[in-house]
Image (cartoon, rainbow, N blue to C red; front, side):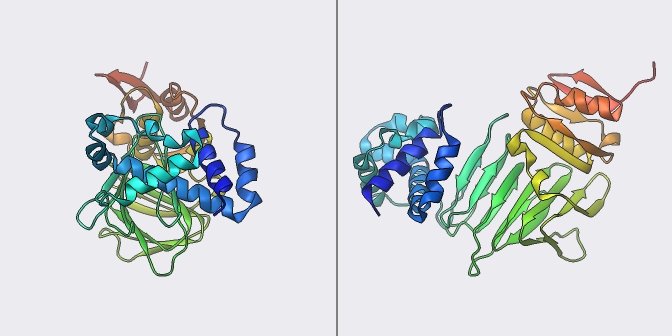
Amino acid sequence: MNDSIIERAAEWHAAQDGDSMDWDAFTLWLEADPRHRVAFDQIALLDDDLVMQRGSIGRTLGDASIVDRPPRHWRFLATGTLGAVAAALALIVGLPYVANGPDQSVSYETARGETRQILLRDGSRITLAPLSVLKVGDARQSQLALAGTAYFDIKHRSDRALTIAAGGLVVRDIGTAFAIDSGADGARVAVAEGSINIASTALPSSVALTAGQSFTTSKAAATAVRGAQRADSIASWRHGQLVYDKTPLALVVSDLGRYASTTVTIDPTLASRRFSGILTIGDGTGLVDDVAAIMALDARPVGKGIRLEPARKP
């Protein structure tokens, strides 16, 4: 690999933390040469390894504060120098890999209003939505568990089937693009590209989904419904919108709580009602009121949060 390509990949990786990131120029750079994508993925993987290995690195360097250092402070690549990359590689080589061994799992979490990009070793990419947790449970990174919402862009590998446990479902995939939204009441799965297989102890048989199809379960209504969904509306939260088509209100409320500045709950009698519409996320403050207005419900303060309830008669 050309040293200048590695240095440029490091610079682009570090720049993504800044407000001045030029995404158009970055895309053009990636598409200009296949080696650019390879170099960038290698840099991103190395950065993730540094974050996961910070405990071992801290012990090696005799700096206990490294363990508590926020992940963004690990962007050692901000210097854009090949020397920094080489030094980090040399350090990693000398450390045992324990973050994702046979008996351990790695967890990725996001706070309210925060999203996170996760890169698996095979180049698969996962975008984790706010207030979500993704656990990678084995060394091959083929067994995942999701609590919350995520978008998966999985590299095709015929020798490995990826399984994701979420909301009482097990999604099996060998390479495609899809989204999963899981909450206490159930889950939604929608496929943008390729096909996946869904299994559950609550289903009489497995369900196969292809591009443009969705599958929604609701514990409150004891239903499992196959539907259709446009590819450009799948994981629309990545682009600042929440798009729903006959979605149980309980799942909608789970989404609202990821962006609103407070906890959002719902009266159990409303959990299975269906909601359709497009919501603009913005700063999240108006989402609950928007849903309440559309569905003719009351949004009432309860404790430290907001609760959607049937509208009271005047």
